Length: 111
Length: 116
Image (cartoon, rainbow over all chains, first blue to last red; front, top):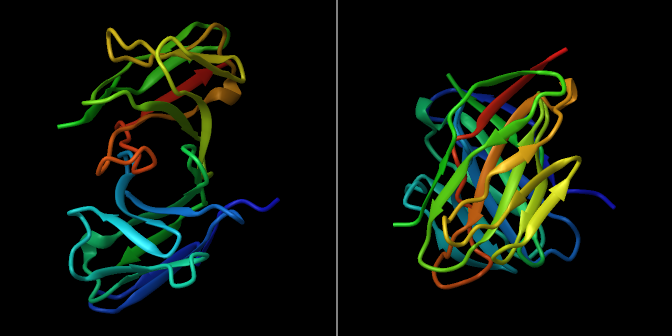
């Protein structure tokens, strides 16, 4: 049984560049979540999917952020025109009912 | 609006000491309640959970009881070990858009350091 996986684990980019992260949930989990965690804070919700439908988006998710889950399995989170304030750990979680299981995260550093 | 308040840290204890980390929340409904732990260099792991009033979640010697009257879910352990050093997050499953399976709302986290 494999857990939630995320790629890449680390990403360094220059301000203004686009980045894309991938999340592979636990097999058969129909719900998938994205969170963002900055240093010294708890994770903050960004968005979630049930199967391929994006059911909720946080106000934190500006127009530069877009997430997809085209076939109801893996998901991608894209950030366009990155800013230094986007530097954070991006966490993905999946669930079947209630309990969410987290991946190791992708740490983004925007220079 | 719905929110969670977690005891601020850091908390420093000697091995075998008693641990309490307070967590209270405000919610319009009756959320499921979770504690997650983040060990140094690792991802978030579920520590324990409770889904209805008076339920007690337990794992690895940690316990927390769902108190509806006080809207609290305090984490306790009778005798901490050095290996318990980590960051602990309270995370109620607050109602999101009327669904039961929406977002978790995390507290700010409590850093626990246990010395030998």
